[in-house]
Amino acid sequence: MTEPGSEPAVGAAARAAIEPGADPGAAVWLAAVRQRVARAATAAGRDPASLVLVAVSKNQPLDAVLALAALGVRDFGENRHQEAAPKAEAAPDLHWHFLGRLQRNKARAVGRWACTVHSVDRLDVLDLLAPPEPDGPGPGRALEVFVQVSLDGDPTRGGVLPAAVPALADAVSVRPTLRLLGVMAVAPVSAPARPAFAALRATSEDLVRGHPGARFISAGMSGDLEDAITEGATHLRVGTALFGPRA
Image (cartoon, rainbow, N blue to C red; front, top):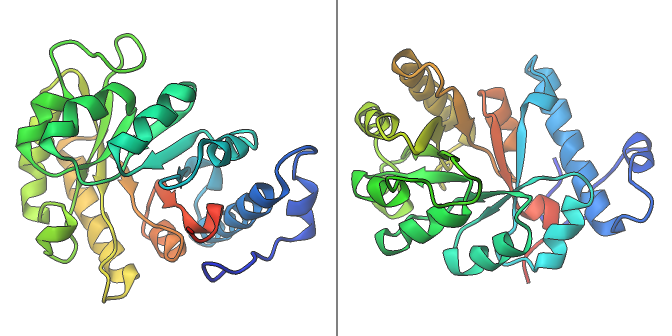
């Protein structure tokens, strides 16, 4: 596994796939991440093409986003509305994900530019995210949402306990301008990631019994994406391994 902040090792085949004229730094980092994803998916008996790589572009300039977009990355994740909105306006053809804690006073504004929100963890933001008529990008577009699950019970990190997921999912599903995708979580800080992701997978399986379409799992970041893939993650939120350490 590539350590964050170190230059990734990229095989000859991956280097050959780097497009002429592409930003060589972005291309090398992206090739290394794609190699990791492919290896982990293959080991788990999964198709790497079925996984969504969300490039976490918080604190990154628009030029860095566009460099990855030129290499075929279409999904970008942001944590703060104030930083994300101008980027989304400048690059409306990309699929923008909101990943941060969702504040009530920012929820409606987030819903105008985000295509997917990963951090729904309470009822009081749902009607703000889901106005009577969609007013975000794309006519008639339903805003995709994940229910955030707490894997460690720490209220400062967001998320609901697994037992509360069904009620929140039911509330999402009855709002026609929202589309329930599944569950999202962040691995605990002081515990191994793999058991936590296994627990998230169990929560996902319980959710799918009542909501068959909500089969997606948002989990895994630069340091633990292999564990997440092994436990069924479909959406990987990768920042440092794609952009390098933040200044």
